[in-house]
Amino acid sequence: MQKRGVLIGAGALVTVLLTVGAWFAPVPYVVRQPGPVLDVLSPTVITVTGADVSASTGKLLLTTVEIVDGIDTATAARTWFEDRDALIPREAIFPAGQSTEQVLQANQALFTTSETTAIDVALGKVGRPTGVRVTIDVKEVGGPSAGLMLTLGIIDKLTPADLTGGHTIAGTGQVTADGAVGPIGGIPQKLHGADVDYFLVPADNCAEAVGAVPPGLTLARVATVDDALLALKTIAAGAQPATC
Image 1 (cartoon, rainbow, N blue to C red):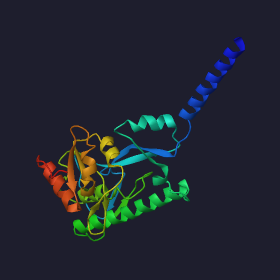
Image 2: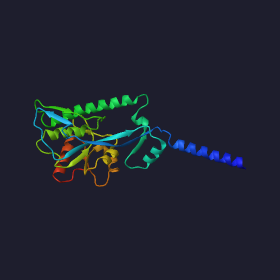
Image 3: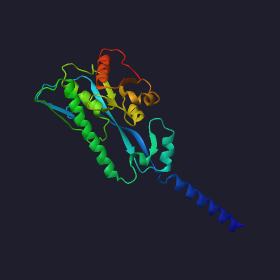
Image 4: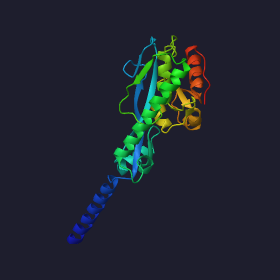
């Protein structure tokens, strides 16, 4: 009887160890969570030479997401029940056949393109003043979704009026050469990462955003840079912008 008891006890111990091992085993998923926010009106982000630059009493926040790789079953289970973070298949971020470094390089290339487009679109909106040079310095941000806020930041600096009206306004969205604002990924995480009253949301992200909006946050629906400028003007005037 004593020997049998030892064997049963040993079997229970093995079961516990296997369960614990499975709980902390890696899974083929990543966590997408809110990342840092960055004020594009900061003098270190956008530098304009060859023209007078106006000051702003408010902020325009560029929002980001972070990807947490190498998660285990326990982390995946916790994330599944959270509203703020998202559990997504790893291959959706790191496709098979591409190294992490290759993915990072591709995202950086997309960001560089979005910088160039933002400068071109912004200068077009302010009349392309002769001799103006704009440089952007944003580190550790990839992808195209910073385009809208960078565009607005440049326009604000080259416009005598304070476009923010003293408000802190966050946003996101790709910008194309014709001034259209395109959808981005991670909108729920970006909404939760920005502790503000107003958020500029690409029109094609509105349906997803409405289902994830934190209490007290007003969504401003924008399909173009002109829509975004109108939303800023409306907010500055103390009125309600067009919402999702």
